[in-house]
Image (tube, rainbow, N blue to C red; front, side, top):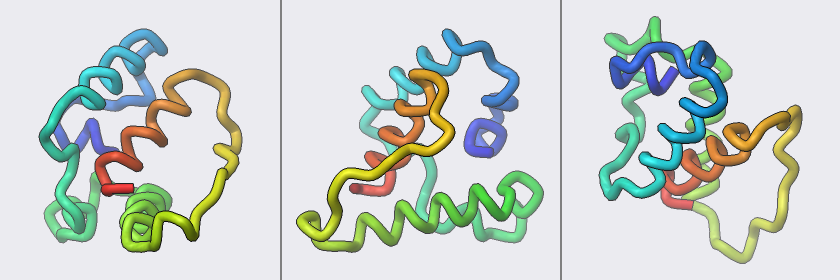
Length: 96
């Protein structure tokens, strides 16, 4: 959803190398990937699925918590490096 929002096409259609390269570039960038709440704007309704919105809101909520209140967690259904890097990118973007 985020890459479509940014006008880059579908992340899911990219091969693993393209995914890892793009995420790595984003991790090195100082700019925010997406502004908090942009996923709820009416003009973006077709870009963000309910699951994506829930995920982005969860990261926003986690960022508001005391750092010591969160421990390790499992990234379910992880099958590739880009799955792990995606979580890292979303965490950093949310301020976790």
